Amino acid sequence: MTARLETTIGSLRLKNPVIAGPAEHLADPDNVRRALRTGVGAVVLKSTNESEAAREQLERAEYAVFDAQWRMAEWGPDAPFAATIATRSGMMRIPFEQWLEQAVALDREAKAHDAYAVPSIIVADLDRAVEMARLVDQAGLRALELNIGTPYATEARKGAVTTEFDPSRAHAMVAAVAGAVSLPVWVKLTGQSERVPDLVAASFEGGGSAVVMAGRLLGLIPDVETMQPALGTSLGIGGFWNLPLTCHWLALSRARLGPDKPLIGINGAQSGLDVARMMLAGAHAVEMASAVMLRGFNVLSDAVKALDRYLAGKALTAKDLIGRAADARRTFASLPALGENWKRYVPKH
Image 1 (spheres, rainbow, N blue to C red):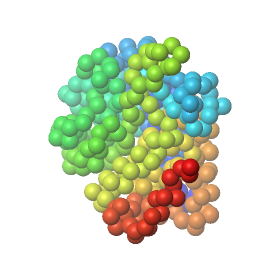
Image 2 (cartoon, helix red, strand yellow; image 1 turned 135 degrees about the vertical axis):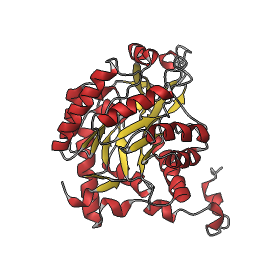
Image 3 (cartoon, helix red, strand yellow; image 1 turned 120 degrees about the vertical axis):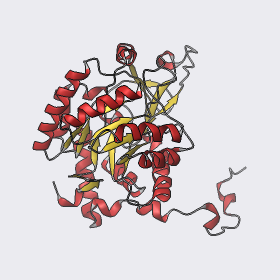
Image 4 (spheres, rainbow, N blue to C red; image 1 turned 180 degrees about the horizontal axis):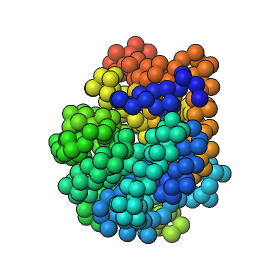
């Protein structure tokens, strides 16, 4: 691993900016170990909370991948690159105490890889989330992800998970948790809002150490043959096409808050060059989850290697990338007039 890959998330140094994001493929501790062996800078563990409804939802979980014509494709590494991943997922089934014991052991192993294993709590009841966060802190974990931006809150049983759209409530949630612990808190936010930069600002003002942005969207995919919704309901959706949306929110948030607030990109990265793209938009690191679940853990190792090759070719470090495209971004009104250039793009008779 080369020094040019190093990045920082607040007080934490990561050996590289590729993070294995949480999903069902990381529910098994052995798969967390597989992720660590790929050379990533961190692994965010599969989330938990106290809600039995959220845990029970795992038994209803289902996953599908669609091609560019919205035809369901076979799940696996041979799925088309231009794919949409659609899921209805659930929470870890094991009790919190066992989950915490696993997290401690996995983070101990992560240290041997010069990496981090970061536990993730999804807010259901805020008081319980605070209590769990305190126990995570007392157990000696080195960071915590606080997820208040799941895509499923309107579809799951009431009170199972949180999708927070209101910046004032986001501030209160983050402040309650961050104020109760000494470890860094990474706040994961929804992308289903026009107020993403406001949510980011509120999370930092509440004491968050970093913000993970922006989570999957909720969408409906009708099947034209059966005339029914795919997998029976609205789904959490993501794919390669979401990268420009994530980069837009990263750039706007960086412009709002300045370059020193650590942002972690998520949703849309499938390769090392995608990691570079999100970093150019303002991310200090990038989580990869759905692409790994679909195509395998080599996605992570390939991303680390590809990013290293890219940086070597540009004679840059990972830190040199952060925000370069975001800081060069201009408004429409500031761009030069091009006369009747638009006519070049109108279909000919």
